[in-house]
Image (cartoon, rainbow, N blue to C red; front, side, top):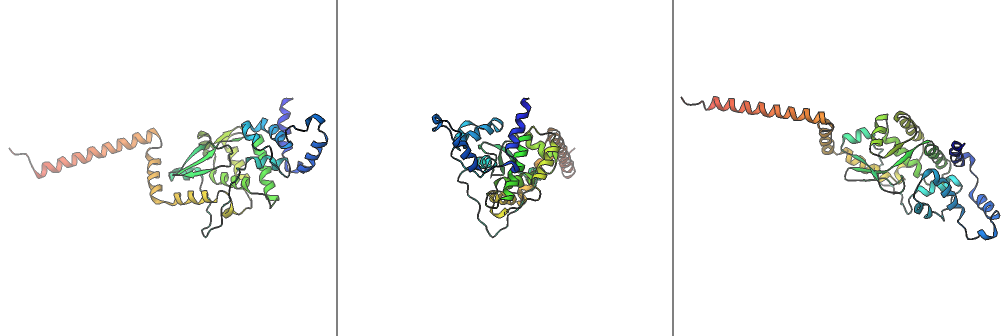
Length: 280
């Protein structure tokens, strides 16, 4: 019955199943044996337990051995939040939600897999969005849903997972967007078809409340929007997308260019022969 273990992981992190962490710590302390006083903390043991299914590097887990949370869900959620990450300050310009993957590609914006330890660390520079790979499976979908629900219910908590859910929802409109993210190794799909993943992401970011001007990705949203609005980028990227996106479109464009060149050459020599007829 090894299959039932996956249900334990999900049930332990359901929002409605949470027990205050200080209660768990007290139970943990009173059940220790005398020779276990210097053993690992409850936080470290819990993160190691969930790492059997999340599968992060051991040094990442060790770095969070002193991490605290309101409960197990908050503990695991907090372990994904990068330390010392500053939230954006409210400016005079409102933050813009970015477009889906298909539109971003047509404007010349590329998406590449990032190398950071947490999938929450998203970067944008020189027309490239870097997103660490995220595995979409039964556990991760349940974890994301419960994290977003927790952040919506607790006003004092940060809104990192809610922001990330909104970011994914902006990127994904159709199954084609999920397919492209999978081809780029940004999404590892163990959940179902591309259409099912797109449906989950769209529902995840639906009807969530947070201040987009103060979220941790607000600068990225505005930078991507400014790049998208640049007419030169859009026109040049649209030209490349139309004529150089596939080998067949490139061959067609090359054939049309050669035909145009031959036509211009023929016209030139025809006019030249008319202006300077050959002498007899």
